[in-house]
Each structure stands twice: as C-alpha cells, then as structure tokens.
Amino acid sequence: MFRWPAGSSILFVLLLVPAVRAQENTPPSPTSTNTLRQLTGLNEELQSLAARIAPSVVKIEVSGLTAVSDPATPNASFITKESSVGSGIIVDPSGLILTNAHVVAHSTSVLVTIYDHPNESGSHPEDVHRLKAQVLGLDALTDIALVKVDAKGLRDLKLADSDLVRVGQLAMAFGSPLGLENTFTLGVISATQRQLNVSSPVIYLQTDASINPGNSGGPLIDIHGEVIGMNTMIASESGGNEGVGFSIPAKTLAFVYNQLRTIGHVRRGALGISVASITPELAAGLGLSDSPGVILEDVVPGSSADSAGLKPGDIVIEMDGKKVQQPQQVAVILFSKQIGDLVKFTLKRSDATVYSVDVAVTRRPRDPESILDPARLSENIVPRLGIIAVPLSPEVEKLIPPTRGEQGLVIVALTAEGKATSMDLQVGDVLYTLNRKVIDSVQRLRDMLAQLPENAPVALQIERDGKLQYMAFTNPD
Image (cartoon, rainbow, N blue to C red; front, side):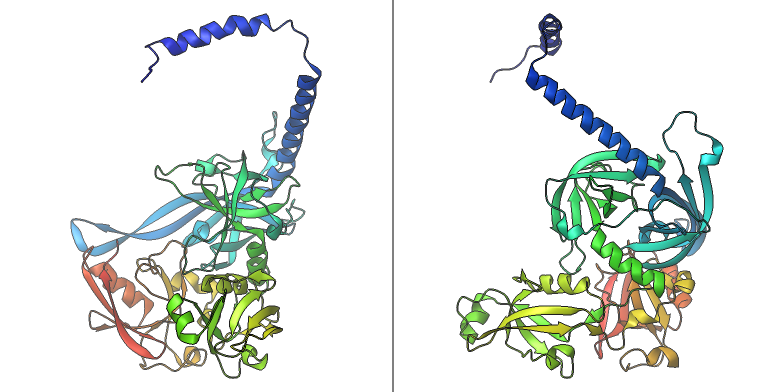
C-alpha cells in the first residue's frame, strides 16, 4: 500500500505555493467573478441575519439546589447549590421567553441576559440587561418551559411552520454554548421526523449545525429569520458536537407555548382508540390481505371515535392525509392536536369498504397532568426517580380513576432528564410502598431513597390501570 513519506505533506504544500502565486496576475474568469459575487451576497446576508436574530436570543443562568451523597456517610444526603447555563428565545415583546425545561428545572434563581447590540465593537454596558426571571410553567414530556422577565419592547422571533422544513435546507443555531453568548453556527437540516424514543410521541429536527452544552433552549433559524426549532440535545460519544444535533420543531413549540401561557401546564387530548401493528400472523388469522396500516384494537364506548362510527377491527390507512404504517405514528399525529381539533381518518372495514370520517379530539378523562401546579413544582419533584408526584387526597381522587389504596403518591409528570422511563414508571401510576414501607408524602419518598446505599435494591408497590404490581430496580445515584 502506498504511503506518503515523512514530511511529504509539508513538501506538498510548498510545491503548491509557486503555482498559486503564478496565477495571481491572471485575470479572473466571468464564472469566478459571478461565484465571488454570489459568495459575497451570501456573506452579507448571513451577517445581516446574525445581527437581526441575536438580540432575540438570551443567555439563561440558573442556580438551584440538588441532593448529593457522601461516600463516608452513605445513609445521609446533603443539599448543595448547583449552577448551569442555557439559552432562550424571546417570543413576545412583553418578556415571554421559551427555553428547555431541563434548563430551569429545580431552579431557585433564574437570571436572563439580553444583548441589544451583540458582537458590535464599542458596545456600551447599557446594551446588556440582566433580569430576574419567573418560571411560568414547564412541560417535561416535550422538555419545553416558559419564563418571563419584567420588560417591554423586546425584539421577539416568529415561530415558523416546521411542517414545511425539508432535508438539506440551511439552518442556523444561536445560543450560548459552554456559556459563550451570541454564538452563531451554520449547517443544514439532516432529518425532519426523528423519533428518538419509540415510547414517546415527541419528534425532532436533526441538524449538523454545531450545538454544544449551553445551546439548550436556543433557536434553530431558517434563511427567513424565523424559528424552525429549539435546540435541545446532541448525540455524542465525546460530550461535544459531532454533527448530530436535535431540535424541537416549531409546531410543537407553538402548541406547548400557547397552553403554558394561558393555563400554566399542557392538557393533551384523546380520541378513545387503541391501535396495533398488523403482523403477518394477525393478518392471516383475520383474513387480511394487502392491508397496509394499523388496526383498531379497541374503541372506547362513548368516546369521540365511537360517536364518529369507528369500530374495533377497522384498518387505519391515513390520518390527516398522512399514511399510517406504525402505531407510533398515531401517537405522533395526535400529540400535536389541541382539544377541539378534528382528525381526518381514512379507514377500511373488514368488507373492504374504504371510508373517511372526522374525529374530534376531546379532553382526556381524569387526566393526572391536570393536577400539576407549576407554582409548587419544586415541592413535588423526586429527582432520583425523575418523577413529579402528589399525595393522594380527596381533591386528587376526584381527578383520577378510583384507587385501591388510601395513602400513596400519584405520578403526574416525568422530569426531562430523569430515569423514570428506564424504571418503567409512567404518568398515572400510584406509588404505595418502597421495600414494604408506606409512602405517604413526597418528602418521605425522597428520604427513603436517600437513606438507601447507591445500587441498593428497591421494590416499589404500585397501582397501574387498577392493578397492583411491583417495580424492582437498583437505587439510582
């Protein structure tokens, strides 16, 4: 195999230099002139875009309290102060700012820095404003939070229609990676419907625009200067950017933003159906031939789907004009719908009849998430499990299905960076005991976990869908 001799790369560069210099006096061709003009135009447009967008992107500094353990005293836990940096998007001149939930979760202090004229020489101290912010609400499932500062006349950004985003289009990431405010990187959209967890309906835009820790909550911008996504996470083996970044689509941002602004939490709707994949065995058993789609396993009596005429055994071919081939697609489409919206179904009956019908999205009955009070969020977090829970009480019992026990905790949300999913804990679960000890308060659960050594066995007795069961795992760090 041919190998360059040692030092040959230097020789190679040196040999090129005379050739380049010899061409310096050669008149440029019309093609190169046009290319230079185009590059100059692109250069100026990017500079103009950066100057226009940057004042609407804020730096967010967060302080909070977290529990840590001392190896010398494994049965005791200590509270320590931690700080972190993220980014945010001004979405309303009155001081409303969108960011990631994991940026402000567990915070005791949120400080927002706004730059009037970033990256300009000779800028003045009055161009920088540092303001305390209040968390108005957050949604752990989508990892979106809304905060507010006391200010007026801020420069806001418009949320684009992310359904129109296409692979290959230019994308620009803004934010404060590693705490370096007013950072601007350029790349393209690598994918538009990236579902990172098959059990979650959340989808992401994928981009190779450089994203690093600290970019979380900052905008992904198109060439028109509109927000197509919120930079949220990266896939990395090194911990830094490797060209695989993920952004929450602007359509999801708009859906969550409107609810956090008005009611402080997100209410999601339901249709009253459950679906399943059509496996070869199921198709053969039911006599289905050439049936792309998913099958309705159940239609809840009295639900909007039942009222619209959907029946168990129907094959869902399309929803809102999009072909459906996997059950996850049903959840993804429903995820972006608000209560009162209509979903257009195209279905096929067992007699091969194809029909279309609109089904209304209705409020989920006895929704555990409706219990969540953003103002008291910190009181209800169990960081080790990555859950937000509330004690059973007469008021809570009115909002959830009947429970088997009188004392326990109801999981009403999962935290953005928690481990609940790996433990198979879900919203709506009722926690009764931990290693046979009764759980009667959130603080009691936190204390019991803190008193157990790291990796000690944990056996939770829970109730799910009216049935008691045990969840066993090791005590997380």
